[in-house]
Image (tube, rainbow, N blue to C red; front, side):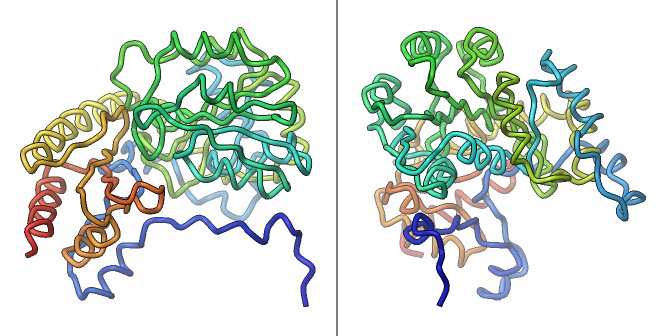
Length: 361
C-alpha cells in the first residue's frame, strides 16, 4: 500500500524509559521514582524557571539562536560560525547522517553505545559497523581497524552510554593523529559535566587542531532541562554550513533558548549537581558491593551494575516496587541493569528494593 524507503524497514524505534504516570497506573502505586533516563534528580537551576516565560509563544523563535549562541561561544571560547543548535543532540546527530552518508557508506562506533548513531546512519541507507570494546569501553584501536574505504563517520561517546566508561586525553590525541583526514570523528560528550577524572580530554582543543572533529554537547543532563530539547554541535565552519542547509527552521523554541541561556549561566548549580552526584554515586557503588554486585567504574550520573540475573526480570520486579531502571538487555548486557544516580533518599529506597528483589521478596 505504501512505498516506504527500503533503508527504514529494518530499523527499530527508540524505546524511552517508561513514564512515571504509566507505571503508577499499571501497578496501582502512589509513588514512583524514575531512575532510567539519566536525568538530573535535582531538577534545573532556579534561574531557568524565571527565564523561560511564555510571552512569545505566538511568534516563531529566533532561528539563529542569537542569545544562546552568544552565551555558548562566550562560555566555551567558540566562534559563532562553528556552532549549530538542535532539538537535543539527537537532532544534531541526525543532521550529520544527512550531510555525510550516501547509500552504502559506512560509519563506525562501539558495539555497545548510544543507539541514535546507528539510526542517523541507517536512515540514510548507510551501514553502521560495530567495533569490539575493551573493558566495556571504547577501544580506539579497534575503531581504527574497522575503518574501510567506505567509512565516512566515526561516532564516539566519551563517557560512554550505557557503560559509563571513559578514555583519557592522551588516548584521544593518539587516536586523532591516526584517523584519515577525510573521516569525520564525532565526540559525544553528553555527560562531560559529570566527569571527575583529571585526564579527561579537552575536545575543544581537539577541534582546534583537527578540522575533521565534531563535538556534541547537551543541556539535557547536568543542566536539567531535558524536556526543552536543546543541544548543539561544534565543528569546522565548513561542516556547520552544510548542517545549516538541512536544519529544520525554528527547531529550538524560544522557551528552550531562554532556559539554556539561564542554565549555562548558573555554574554554581552545575557544580552542586556534580558534587552531589559523586557523593551519592560512591554510596551506591559501596552498597552494591556489599550486596555482592559489581558495578562498572562510571564517570557519568548512572551506574551499570551486574546483578547476575535476567535484567528484564529484575526490571519488572523493581518497577512493581515503584522504581524504574533500565534493563541491560536493551544493550545486549543481559545480566546488567543501568541505574540513574538519584538523590540519596531515592538511592536508599532503590537499594532496599533491589535487595528485596534479589532475595525473592
